[in-house]
Length: 118
Image (cartoon, rainbow, N blue to C red; front, side, top):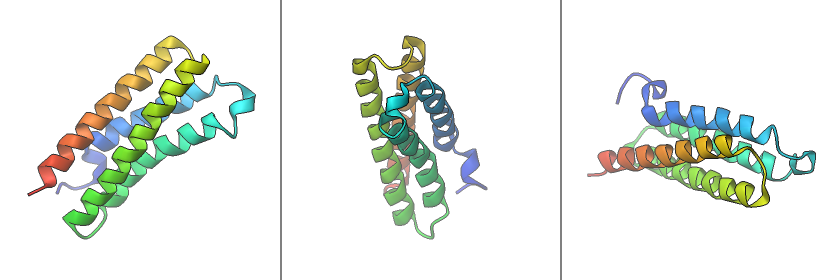
């Protein structure tokens, strides 16, 4: 592996996704502060956090397990974006940006996981 998880495209893009989710949810209704806003932010933070935690583990198997958790959290975010869109929360450009980032992170994670499997 490289020098740091910070060098991983998956981690870098997931940080961008997290920032985009925070920007998107800042415009959500106050009534969603403890609902969708909180859930989306936690799931987005979880993507990058699981990539970093897995990278710091001792074995490739543990790393793959945490990448799987990251991919699951990314799918949560993707689902929550669909729900946000259906409820009319957020601007169309921000929703599109977060959707695209989410898709990209998912693709990168899939490729990274594939590269680590025997």
